[in-house]
Image 1 (tube, rainbow, N blue to C red):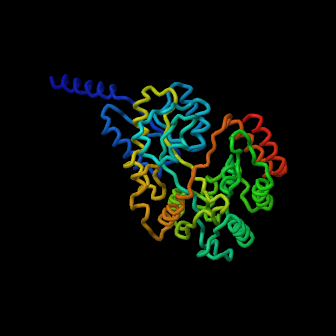
Image 2 (image 1 turned 30 degrees about the vertical axis):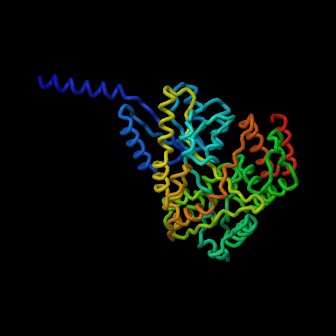
Image 3 (image 1 turned 60 degrees about the vertical axis):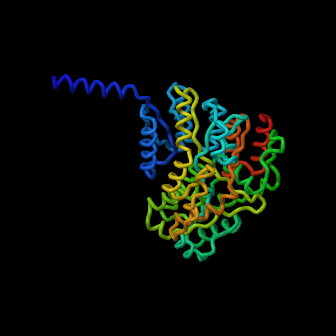
Length: 409
């Protein structure tokens, strides 16, 4: 009898587990730093939805697009996926995302400018999550060795470049690693107050003398050995590694990545101070990439998937995430007013949060939406790389990109 009861109990438990709906959500490069917070979210969602078994999967940034496209193609996509705004544009164009149906009350939870970033052709294809304006973390020890004043960091792009040259000349170390790989130069144009498209949005216009001069500055730095050789290939990942190793004077980064420095090298972190990202007065804007949650095409239960995306990005959870990262900012109106964001501190992470909080009014996601984005972005990337390598002049590279874009737009 006892054996029968145990067997019956095990069978009942197995049936209950089998009846649970399996759901999965993916994030970008949050492990292992934020494992505890992600596991808390899983436990909380399962508590609120007892019939659901939720699984969290963390994916490296450079693998996310291909992994999601493969999952959609196989008919087994996750319920909700964390994507950056530029990924959303590309994947939406490729038909990999499902539009969401938000009520007016749900829309009002988020800042209008953040929700509009994920609105394509009038359809909401994602809900905003976190963002952080860029800051400049700098190594005070390297500054001193280069004869620079650690209490007077660069305030403009030009003085930042001059400091980078001085650091390399005096110490042999690189001063900075600009974020110019991929299509990032498009954001630098806009930060400098230079247009990318004309007012109609149907014509590329970034081959003017001013655009050429901006790109030329970086080409000159690259040619003369002031920028690391793998800048165009590895971007901010390589910059963070180099800075954490104590071999880079300044790190242009979202303040959340200062936590990685603390994690990787306590000695370098102790020497780190944080300054505002040097704005270009003409643009008076800081490109701030926005993260969001999307629902892929082909999910089994779109309503449940949307419920999960809204849960992950609600007021309570956005504030909790900011308190764990200590450096990211919510995209929801209510959470953003919390006093946590005005708390000071002498460590680099606290400095990063305070500096970034003063920059929020200049923060804007400058991702542009245009047809054939994947194709046009490749043309842009290939030609900028050719200009950096010296196989094309900057003028020829920009002329070729604009010609190719305008044939498509």
